[in-house]
Amino acid sequence: MQTAYARMVYDRHQQRLQRREGGEVTRATTIKHWLKDACRKLIAFMFTQVGVCGLVVAYNIMGAFAFRAIEGDSGDATPEQVAQDLREMLVARLWNVTLRLNVLEEDQWRKEVVGALEEYQGSVVPLVKTKGYRGVHPKEAWSFSASLMYSLSVYTTIGYGNMTPRTEWGKITTILYAIVGMPLMLLYMSNVGEILAKAFKFLYFRACRCDIGSLGYYRSASGTIRPVTAAPSRGNGGKTSPGEKPRPRTIPITWCLLVIAVYVFCGGLVFSQWERWSLLDACYFAYISLSTIGFGDLVPGRTVAGLDDAQLVESQQIICTVYLLVGSALVAMCFNLMQEETIENLKSFWRNLGCLRRRAVEDPEVELGDHIRGNGG
View (cartoon, rainbow, N blue to C red):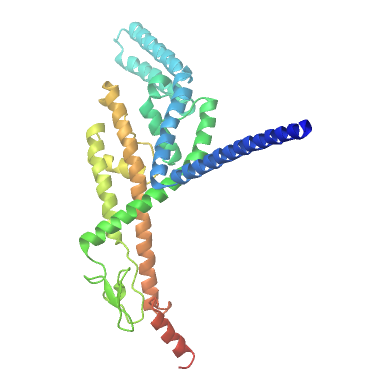
């Protein structure tokens, strides 16, 4: 009897252990599934429009802090020290020339001064080309706003060239930053450009009312009234032939060019006031930057008047970064819309020449009639 009782207690203990282990396994499995689901949702959100925008902004800010720490705090200040020594040597040489000639021999004085200045220029130019000399200490040159502009110019492939890394770690970081940032920028332009394109199409067709008729319906071959989801063909004066599918909605190229021109002009007005540029130079800078050409002959934050207020210059550079980031998506949207319009115009042109077949309406009755006629009635 004691053996039976001991066996019963042992069996109950084993059952409790199994239940506990089963609960722990179930709990661990639940946590594992929850983590997987959370990671899946996070990744899906990152590839949405809002997630991509936030990811690009965060990536830009992260790059600004990284480059500021690498190039600003631990950057090489040797070119600035060399340039300062050259300036002091030039001043001393000019003073000795003035004392020796006593300004009585003006022609000789001018000749020796010009020679000294040319020698100083020949020594400074290599510092600018090879050492990245900018006339200020790296801590002042690599401010947060300047680092933000540099990060933007790297992954958008603008590449002004006014700021370049001097340290080895700065160059390695720039390479890795560009490798990750350029695909991210393409994803950003694609997603945000798609949203802007849909919004622009909605506003355009809502405001202009230039789509199919005024009611938005067409009559099928059987006489049934069906809603139209595409614009009429412009090759036939806005009319579609029976059995032909209407032309998809597209935005005229002139409107896309107008959007780019207005955005560039607005940016030009702002930059001309900030940087003391002419309106033409400011618009030229805006378009060269938005098209990612980036010659670097005009860069914001370089005016003498703006250098008196460092906080004002930093705020202007941050606003310029936002302007270029939004403008890149806007230009991508306009280029995509112009591509759609051009393709549809080419298709209409080739259809009118008879090189392409007309689009059949997605109507079962029309398709059935074509099938019967094709089989000899």
